[in-house]
Image (cartoon, rainbow, N blue to C red; front, side):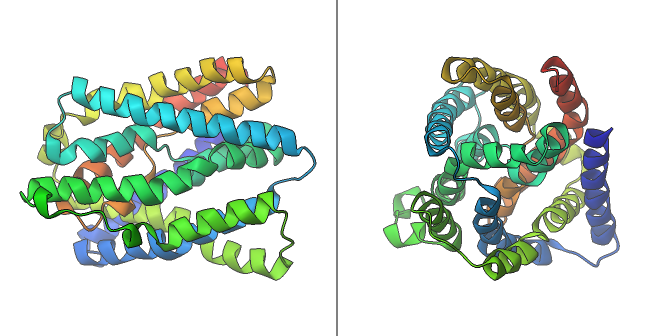
Length: 310
């Protein structure tokens, strides 16, 4: 029931975005600007606030879980490249589809779901396991979107990776969060209150933007985005199964195994759509992937939780 409630809240936010676009209150330009707000401001605030609930009681377990996350995300990057080649994804969308495979909607959906199933302590485990997510997204993912757009416009030869482009608010917040935690830097409560206050708008606002982006796409466009359909069973079924098998080799704790598996079984991260917002063709594919996978996850997540005995 709790999972259904969480999914319904996200679905309602998407429907509101859909309605606002149809009424002309939102448009593509507004979506792009709000997406930039999320990527550059509110999401970094979530990253900084996430460590407020992380305990320092068992640093060895934390480090082990953090390393497990690094291994899993490295494996996901390799598998994403393999899957996109097997699916014969067009070159100008290959990086975008790789991001849909790699990044699941942990922050906006995974956290409330595992908290409902396993209690507040689950936030601690899923936060540590997904720490590599932030650094990887704000470096590799943003580069993939830019590269896809360059291929589409035949400007790939002009694309140069400027190291300075890797320095953004998201990567700064990610590195800062790691330093604050592992160096055990005491932060005042008002710091977490402020970043938490700003970060809390991220989930509803991101889902509203996704709904608005969907309203901008016709049913024909959804049908013609053929790569979405083979992507779905891999994103929602195969990848969490891989995490489940890997975590059995890493730990014998069934709770940690279940938390990490359910987190990996979330739909495509809404950040994939947010980050691709400056590039229309890539954003269209990403937005469709987020919405369709979120709708399908209304079925797959309860099934996964039941199979794991959650």
